[in-house]
Image (cartoon, rainbow, N blue to C red; front, side):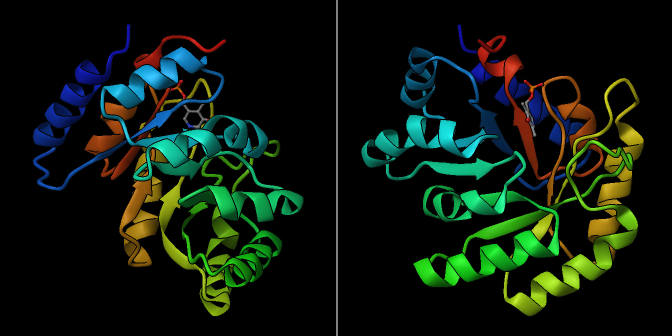
Length: 215
Ligand SMILES: *Cc1c(COP(=O)(O)O)cnc(C)c1O
């Protein structure tokens, strides 16, 4: 049983409660979901999906993108430079730019393939050593480098530390984006997307609340 309508309603209500007029995009996180769930979501009209692994995403989405040409696929997991070629060919937005090395590889590959994908920079707002994302203090330099490389950086993405209130992280990300004139904020997951919308999220990444627990 998919919860598409329920989640979409909660997004609309949270947007209204926040006194916001803009539209918040639901990125349906389809990782580790079975084929029948994905196909049901497509039948019910979902078109924006998030995946965290390049290979898994390619298996799932290459055939479906032929059938549904308007699908937008977001990469929301860490990207290694050896997967950049495949990622640029498959995805429509890269949400996880977090190093100069990756930025350079993406810029070169996009040029090669003639695909200028919009990108977000992932910020490690909790300064967690094991987590992807650029450290807050290194963010301005990375943004400058991305711009110099010609990457189309639209905004920021974060995953707050588990077991901590998410709101301070969302607020920090929103401030950072505003300071640097970046419009897109990808933040909020199943447990906290309404909080993220209150803090200014333009994109929420929802998996389990939409599709049920992962397999
Ligand atoms: C898995 C994942 C999500 C979705 O998580 P849920 O709690 O199932 O909504 C969102 N963002 C990222 C980066 C993820 O890896």
